[in-house]
Image 1 (cartoon, protein in one colour):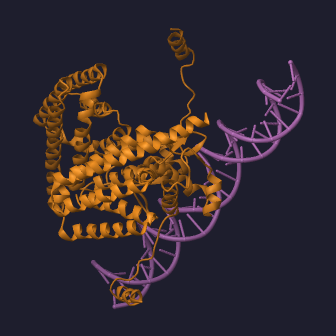
Image 2 (cartoon, helix red, strand yellow):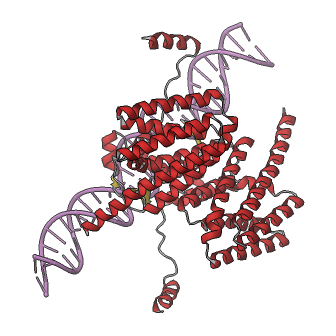
Image 3 (tube, chains in turn green, cyan, red, brown):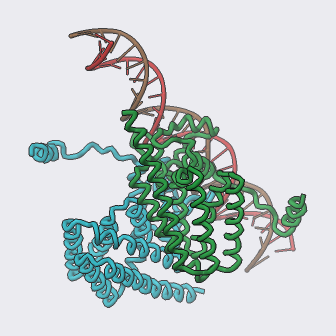
Amino acid sequence: MNADSSRAENNAVQPVKIDRRSLHGEILTRLRTMIVEGDLAPGARINEVEICTQFGVSRTPLREALRSLASEGLVELVLSRGAVVREFSAKEVSDAIAVIRNLEEFACVSACTQATDAAIGEIRALHDAMEAAYEKGDRRHYYNLNQEIHTRLVDLADNSTLSQVHETLQASMKRFRYAGHEGSENWARAVAEHRGMIEALEARDPDRLKAVIGQHLGAAWERVADMFAATQEGAKEKH
Amino acid sequence: MNADSSRAENNAVQPVKIDRRSLHGEILTRLRTMIVEGDLAPGARINEVEICTQFGVSRTPLREALRSLASEGLVELVLSRGAVVREFSAKEVSDAIAVIRNLEEFACVSACTQATDAAIGEIRALHDAMEAAYEKGDRRHYYNLNQEIHTRLVDLADNSTLSQVHETLQASMKRFRYAGHEGSENWARAVAEHRGMIEALEARDPDRLKAVIGQHLGAAWERVADMFAATQEGAKEKH
DNA sequence: GGATCAAATTTTGTATGCAATATGCATTAC
DNA sequence: GTAATGCATATTGCATACAAAATTTGATCC
């Protein structure tokens, strides 16, 4: 493959840096993914030794990663009882989505005025890839591209604080985004909204972009609200 | 009711709720204060054993606290080189203040529509106390009340995510807020702006409140920008 | 059968120990 | 005098050890 030759070229120009990642950083990433993707159920207690043996590390770096996750709001720390995967109430999800929406709307203005054509082109490419994933019914790929598009859009505003806060919140809400796309008509609508987004961005029309994004995330919450309502009925039945 | 009196009695009889705080939580709070108030200089490396002996604890809970601070953005972790107090460039401060401003403007609408009179009254009381501190020239007290007012204003929106993100960002920028009030005319202007804020809030006029807050935080950045410019000249002289 | 309570077990929180990496310093070569 | 090299020290990252707290178990009583 080409990869080899290009790697060789890179070697000549820029000698390969040795990957030096810390264990707690690695664990942090893996745990975050596990929580966000639902491998660890909300409300579940995290048993340290269990995860440790699973990951093949000691408790020290794991605990360090758990503190970071607590700061991110993905787990709660209870004294003498360890870490618990955070549960979100309907209101908490609604509130978080409202903040995400506000941040994305805020990003619109700078994005439309100061983004380069190249950067917008990249997002368009991601969007097209996402539509392709939708056509194929490849949910996982679709979700990742969807998330990436929102991240990139915010990045266009060139505000590191904004990007970072948005990224953290988006990650903590990923679970619910997934849920909000259940049902083919919901999914179709979400794709259509996204198409409107990319078009408004290409037109560099901040007001239109704001409106589309606002609608998109407003609708996202409604879809999730339905899910919460359904879940609560299930809970009632249990009672 | 009995509950009240017995609670009061309990307070007398059981003065101290047995300290059930974790060490790392305690350390986290103390370190955060030290960084935010400038006891630890930006760019300074944090020597673990030094802080440990100072606090009388072992390295484990300290390191856990450092991970949390890293997630909050107050320190940076460099592999094999430990934690460094985060330095903010002028752009980073500007960006962060812009996000804070956006969040506070977002809070205005809900605050004006759904806050109770009592809650607004409490903020008015804080404001009056802050003005008193200003008259007395009590900077420390003034700053704390100032910060508290912004926190409470955001809390009025009753959005826990919003409150939490705002609190974290505000804390990380506290240092610069302090700096922005240097010079008596700057200080006086800031107080006047705050007076406009509380009046708009009492009038429950979201648009006016938004405008005043926007102006207040816009001005805050300008004051800080001056400081950064001055600092850079100092740096140039060193060169 | 169910409730109660104490011992046994598990799990967490903190301290300490050890190996790997970084830093500072002296020595050498030029 | 300066740059480069090797060695001693300091500091970090992770693993382990141990004490305190929580949870489970099971024996006892009603």
